[in-house]
Every structure is written in structure tokens, then in C-alpha cells.
Image (cartoon, rainbow, N blue to C red; front, side):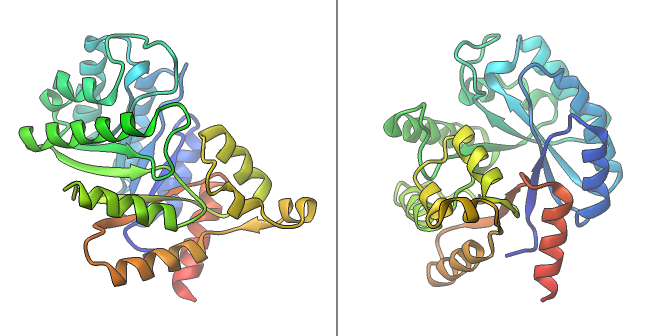
Length: 273
């Protein structure tokens, strides 16, 4: 389970990009966040650096952050032409009003601005515990619509999920996808090693509420100072995959709240133990 993982980083700082190149396995898929207010074109040289160093850059496209179809087309063209990018993760983007013509990931996909510029592998978001800002039926309908569009147009789709602190909601969600006939590969999101305080802060910010109790249960102050890693979650997920052959888990997707180097070193140490 600790091979073929992907990792999510902020490409805002060059040292983070260099750390990815220095510490991750060759061929690792590195997802690059789109932070509101940042110039998205700054991701182009960062993606080129990752590519030169033997990694696979996967920039985020924040649908609601895109200002125009021209911007989207130019961004995709530069990512593909200057950094060899052929895959992205499309997210809706956390803002009330879209900055441009796209209010959803599906609208970006339907514009075909990415496909026309060499982007043929597209990741979409998955929320095993739901999204506090979007009703469950709306989430399910949107996911089904994106999968249907991908099938009609021949896109290579995968799902990367939000992180969680319990595996049971993830496996239940995976089973529900398969029951609906959605069999595209899934990367299961997990938080890398970090203090409980840090993990709790990010969980609240990202709307991961249902499994937060698994993180914070117990003596409050002393527990918040301890560090948690996802080993027990990975073992539980591996057991579920071994017993159910139709979950279609492609691999693990790490969020590095405690730092990229710490997560990469933990992965290497765990594989060696």
C-alpha cells in the first residue's frame, strides 16, 4: 500500500517543489494545489521542475477560480507545452461566486478547453464523509454526471478523495460507488504524520467532521500534543481490499500537513520495517 502513492503539495514555495524532487520516489504523482489569490501560471515552472526531476505533476484546476475560458486554455496549453503535463485534478473551488464562467468541475470538463490542449487524464474529487457545504444527493448526482461525461468522451478519469481518520466510511462509500456502476480508480486520501492539533485544525478547515472523533477521542490536552500517523488506517484499508476485490483502489493520496519531508521519510521507514 505504500508504493505507488501520490502526494499533494502547495507549489507556492520553490523549496516545497525541491523537497518533493529530493524525497519522493521517481514517478510519484505530485498534486499541486490552486490557492485562491495566487497566480495559477506560477504552477507552470513548478510543474516543469517536478517533471525534470522524474516526478509526475498533477496541477489542480479550481473551476470557480478560473476567470475566463481564455485563461483556462492558456493555462492548459502552457502546462502541457512547457511542463509535459497531461493530467490534472479538477475541483470546484472554495468560493461562493465563481470568478468566471465555470461554477463546477463538470462545466470545466464540458468546455473541452483542457482536452484541446493535451490534458487527457482528469482526476475528480471524492467525499466519503460528504461535504458540509453540499447536500449528499447533489454530490452524488454531480459525481455521476462527471463519470457519465468521461465515458461518453473517452476521458481517463480517476477519483482522489478527501482525507479522513476512519476507514469504514471510505469502504462504505466505495461500495456505494460500485453499486452505482461507478468503477473508475480511486486514490484514498490520508493525512501524513502530524500532531493531533495540526490534524484537527485542517480537518475542521476542510470539513472532515464525521471521523474527527477518532482523532480527538481521549484525554484532551495530552492527546493533542501527540503525533499521529496513518499506519492503522492503511492496514485496515489493505484488509478491506484483500477481502473485497471490487473496490478498485488505485493507491493512497497523502496530504502533508506535517510537512512533505516528514511524510516521505515516514513512508520510507515504514516500508523498510
